[in-house]
Amino acid sequence: MNLPKRALWLVALVAMLALIVAAACEDEGEGEPTPGQTEGQTPGAELETDHGVTDTEIKLGMTLAQSGNPSAAGYVTISTALKAYFDKVNTEDGGVCNRQINLILEDDQYDPALSLDLATKLATQDDVLAFVGNLGTPAVTGQVDYINDPNLDGDTSDGIPHLYLSTGAAKWNDPEQWPWTIGYIPDYVSEGRILGAVANERFPGQTVGILYQNDDFGEDGREGFKSVFEGEVVIEQPYEATATEITSELANIRDANPDILYLYSLPLITAQAFQYMQQNDWHPQVFWGYVNAPALVGAIVGGEEGVEVGYQRIAGTISTNYLLDPVADAENPAFVEHTRIMQEYGDIEPTALTVYGQSLGELMVHTLEIACENGDMTRAGVLAAAESIQGYTSDLYLPGIEVNISPDDHFAIQTLQPVQVQEDGSLQALGEPQSTE
Image 1 (cartoon, helix red, strand yellow):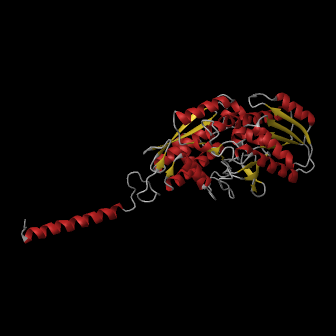
Image 2 (image 1 turned 90 degrees about the horizontal axis):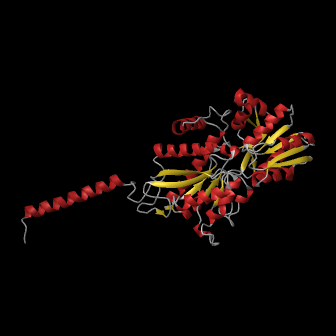
Image 3 (image 1 turned 45 degrees about the horizontal axis):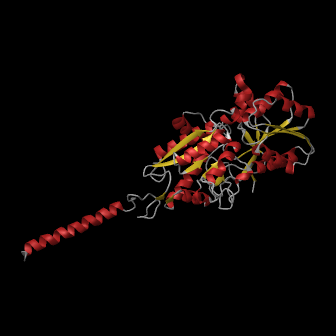
C-alpha cells in the first residue's frame, strides 16, 4: 500500500524521536548497575553465589563464649562491637554489594564439642557464606576440621571460609591442613618471643616465673617466651582452661621468688594474679599477653573501688598491642568515629575490645568488597578475596600495622608494638613495632 508523502514524513519523524529518547536513556543509565549486577562489577556481569547470599542479604556466622567459662565470656563485647559495625555499614553505607550483612551469633561457652555443634548448625541450617572472628583456641580447635572438610572425606574443596579467627594459636597458619582457616591476630608464639626479647633488654640477668593456661594458647605463649629469654626460668605453673581459682599456683610461684612474673592467661585469671599480689604485698615485674585488655583487667582488679584503682595496680605491666588505645588515643578522629558507631549502633561505650571488634568487621567488609568486585561471592570466591589482601590497614591500627595474606600465609596481622601500662590505663610504646614473620 502506498502512503501519502506527509504520512511517510511523520513515520520518519517518530522513528528519529524514538532513537533520540533511547540514546538519552542510555546516557542517563550509564554506570548504573543492571539487575543482578553490583557496583564494582564489569557492566553486564552477574554475581556468582552459592551459599548464604541472596539479592538482599549476606549471611555470616560467628561462634564465641557468651556464657559458661567466666574468663572467656568477658569477650562477648567483641561480638557486640562487630554487629554494631555491620549495622552501621548496612544503615549508612548501603551494606556490601548492595546487600545487608546478617551476622548470626552462637554461644559455644568455650566448649569444643558445643562449638562443633554450633558450627555445623551455622553451616547447614543457616547456610552462612562464611565464619568471621570465631573466638577461643579450645573452641576453634573443636570445629576447625569440620569447617575445612564438612563431610570429612579428605577433600577440602567443599570447605567454608573460616576467616579472621579471634585466637592466635600458631597452628592456624597451616594452609595445607586447613586451607579455609585464616587467623586475624598475631600468633602467641611470636608474641612470646617479642616479650622475651623485651625482658632481655630491659631486665637482663633476672629470673622469671611463668603462669600459663594448659592448652595451645598458654603453651604457645610460654614456649615463645622461653625460646629467647636469656635469664633463668625458676618455676612454671599451668592451670586448666576451666579453672576459676588459682591461689595454689600463685603461691608456688611466689615461693620461688622470681624477679619477673610472666602471665599467659585470660583476663579473669590475670586479674586474680594481681589481686593475689596486692593481698600478699608481692611486687614482681609483670608481663602479660595482648589478650588482656587493660580496661577489662583493671575493672576486675579495681572491683568496687573502680577501674582507676585497678589501673594503678596493674601499672608497669609490659605487654604488646596493635590497635588504638582507648585512653591515649581518645581524641584520635578514628577513635571518635568509633565511639559514635558503638554508642549509636551498639549502645556500648568504647573499650579495647570494641576497637578490636570494629577492626575485625572492617577487614571482613573489605574482603567482601573484593569478592563483589571480582563478581564471585561464592565461598571459594570469598576465600580467594581474603588470600589476595596485601598492604591493608585500618585507621584503628597503630602506625606500622598492616594485613598481608596469601595462599601460603594465613595470618593477617603479623606486627606487634611492645607497650607498658600506665597509671591511667593508657599504653606507652616501648621502642618500635616488631614483626612476627
